[in-house]
Length: 511
Image 1 (tube, one colour):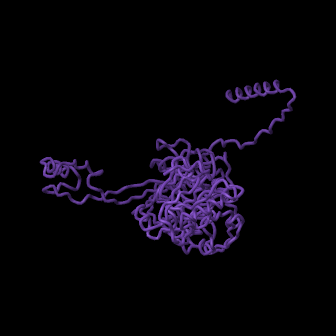
Image 2 (image 1 turned 90 degrees about the vertical axis):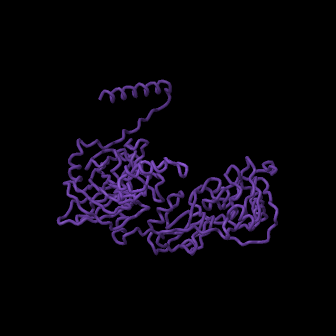
Image 3 (image 1 turned 60 degrees about the horizontal axis):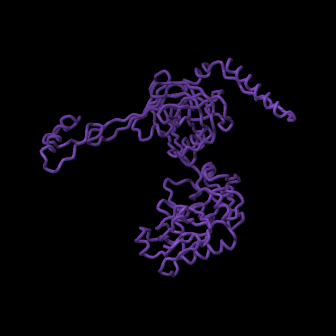
């Protein structure tokens, strides 16, 4: 209590000093915040929950490569060198499973790799939930209960993208199970309890609080992690994060750690996402998410301004899958999705989660920003395919001049899409658009990272097939007094919308 008293006294002194320097100000103190006190002990809660948390070990047979963990690699010698045969004989004699006559190496032996993790029982019949990465590629999975009973498990379903797996163990008696809670009800600062199998030590309990919500750690398209400072280490993966009512509100999945140990930054998949995933894995054996069939990118202020959109909100369509739901709904490259299924799309990364949570086979309204106004279309959602191919934008080839054309103010030189251009820049045979042949230093194009070989497919959401098409659309945008022009660029890593600042002729440099 000494520290508390000192802080209180110091605060009173500071408040007095402020009041003295501003005698006319009327100070209205804030009402003290009410906080739930820390429990005297977590022991009763831990004792109740520990039996439902399990340790998971998985083994996988891998073929060892010659020269790796089984022993040192063969040094490189010139062909015919007397040292070559000497080292080959020496290594073969000292490498397990080898030592064949005349230095002929036997096939590398198979080795068994083991992975350790955690899980929790959600049904007395033996349903166990864990992370997919804990059991991925496993030939054999063993679930160990708190009383050290070991049970063989089979996989009922896996979700690689969501990192969730559902296991089944056979048992002759009901097992202790836990229930999912409402993870959306948890607030930053709420007490939480993590139980798992860190470093293979067995059932371990740690306590902390919800440090943050909605974390995107770039693990997948549906990132919405709960961050906690409850100690989570290697081996905790797949274990539960409990609230003070003993309900699972998250599944511990990842940590941020330069050293590999806990530094108080752990991440859990929200229980609401896990529960929905488990229901589908139980019913179908795989996740059955809604799929729209678009590639999207963030709407920046420059993009918003170039399209006459008041705020930089929504998700911009940068590619449409041929024959997919978006294609059938007449959603185009360059459309900005503002609402999906009556939910606002405030930022790009929220759209995949909204779409995934929507029912497959359901027709939903999609509000788009197109040609300076809102347009609503209906999209019939399909099930997300395993292999999604992004369709290339199409354009109609026209007769084109042969010499590169310089686009005033952007620092670009463009050429038509000829076979020579395709060969020179290793472009696809069906590539459409206008190829960039030169980018001036310090120009708007250079600032955006454009380079020779990139292809302009669309300008201001309209297809282009010649340098003249590009120049015409740029001139049209300038007449509207816009600050930037929007281009759909085909790069080696895919399509991307790029806004270019509309400079003056002084930006133009000789090529």
